[in-house]
Image (tube, rainbow, N blue to C red; front, side, top):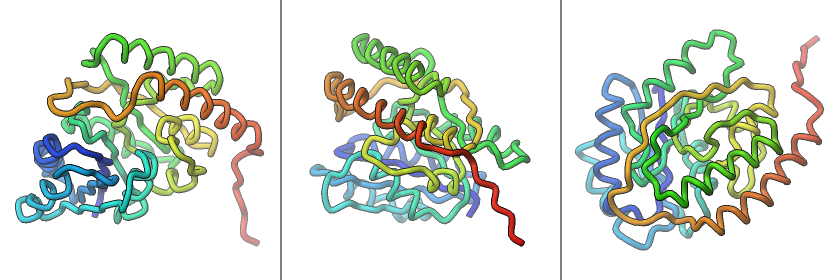
Length: 238
């Protein structure tokens, strides 16, 4: 197994089948597993995924017994992975699986082991103007507070080293701060422009107000974490 693709989903019954097939097609040349983590869906999301098991043999489905949030779903998926390199993308179909090789090529080109994460930067975003404004404001606020240089911290399309991710402190909503947290651990981060597509089915699980309020509180929390870090340890066995 050379790669694991992790997709957190909740109530995305009308999107998951097409997305799973797209991921499988994009990863046809890889020895990859595709893990969908159903975070307590109340619709037919799990059933639609189970119906694909024969068609996509490398598809794995993990289901939470309740709704625990996107960050927990991502962490559940990463903990279950069998590969050292991991890609995540959102389950609403707005991230384009065809961009995955672009992120992987950068991660694999690193011979130092210092590159921990490659983050996608959505260009020509296909969201409503109010969501784009809220996202731009949030990114600017986080860059100012955290000094992480992140252009699009909310993009779900990311590629990273499994060990780098598991070294990060876990908390709810941490998925929005992966760049800052990865830098905190002493790893390097790169960004690459990726495609962004309109949502065809369903609605977003987050409101702008909820996202803004939680994001502000969490940003101060991550800033505190940055101040409490003493540096990267390089132990030497004697």
